[in-house]
Length: 297
Image (tube, rainbow, N blue to C red; front, side, top):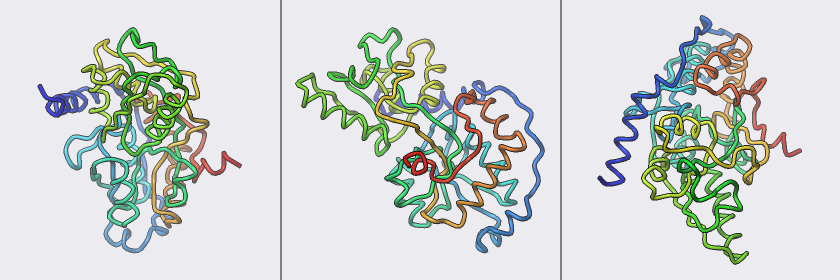
């Protein structure tokens, strides 16, 4: 079976198993915050609609089933935000992070719930409303036969990453370091989505997938004992890593979205959703705008 066909099978498996991964949790009843609704741009208030764009399945945050059917923690947060703001937030899927950012900055989409990694360099063109903290690790074959435990042990191996993401930049820098230090070459394998990346490890086309710990934890739980995490507790090229929703730079929606998420934190909805999807270790006390720049000061 080709890798492309295997990807469809893996994606279908994610859609079926995604709901089984989450535990039922009672969510607080929500109502419209009229003050926040009144602050929305007129075109959004008039249409009563917004579009959140994603770059494909990023479980357990976003599990994409077709063009607009999305489940997962971010999807539930999006629904709750829509209830707070009094608008319907639909979903659109594009191929990869560069297309996601381009679609937002061109005005095609209002924002991306994400979460997407917030880095100071990205804040030049975009605002980030951060609502989780993340860590970057490896997913490897069970037993870790290649002995990949940190960045400096990745030399000589095939490492899968998401194209255009921060992990790709870090692993490419490490590949250059491997060559400079006279170590075996590190082969970077860039994929447009998470299911294809993890499938490459499961099919032994890649030795590891270097990505955010939350989705990798999900993938490992769904791999029937074939995979495990490696490099946990290491910096792996990152300092404090915040992730969140992405909007155009200085978007009038940024403070509104921040306040909507803050309300979900205060009323317990945020915690209920995050715990439901096994993301309690990624929670932060309250959301913030462009936390990467603040952390660097």
